[in-house]
Image (cartoon, rainbow, N blue to C red; front, side, top):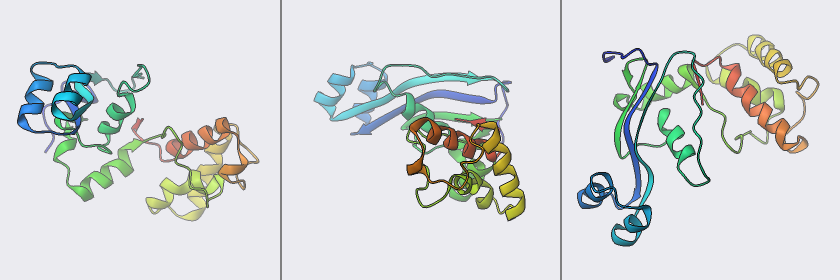
Length: 193
């Protein structure tokens, strides 16, 4: 059941991700005493991935998460579509409590609302560029003509016309990145991570 919406499209409330020991004693020390990463590791065998992060993103807003290597940026972003489960906190998207979604509901939610470009692009090496781009539409059950029409349209947007029959290993890193972006855009998601 949707909750009262604050006007924000995405609401992240007090998200924390602790790897390793998540006993009450460790969580209290981390969240209430705000111990350092080093102390958490040494005294509790806990690794703090994300600690008490909250933010809101409005519809149409471009929101950038910046930080040093190892600061938890990717860990945080992966919570939005629940690729990682938070140790504590709440995630609301368009008023819907993402944490309350069951497995099938979560899968449908991801397929319809969220596109994601992974750091390593996660291209399927056995699929051509055009097949990689069309993949989210294939998963949705879109017929072949429509999905390849859309994939070709997106291929032009990312300026890779003529590369559709190539494979990931035949592309530069930047080109692979554009294929990953094209695949995420092909599904026309409401949210692009």
